[in-house]
Length: 77
Image (cartoon, rainbow, N blue to C red):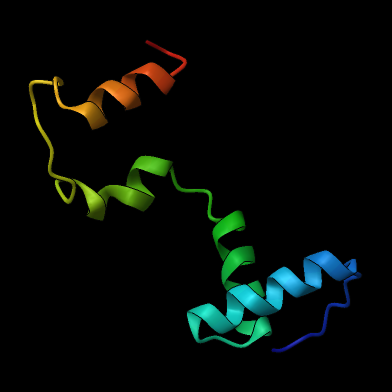
């Protein structure tokens, strides 16, 4: 069953929506539905991004410039 939802966006939001949808090769409606679906997903973040495990490669020593920069910006460290 389909239903229609009307929302109001300011000009900046609508412009960003159009640009992002076009960049992704989606219609505005497709992109909004995808964003809403993600927002309503109640599974844990770990479960949602588990497929990304191991996809980043980097130095394990933590002595390269990227690791140092990341560590400096991480509020937990």
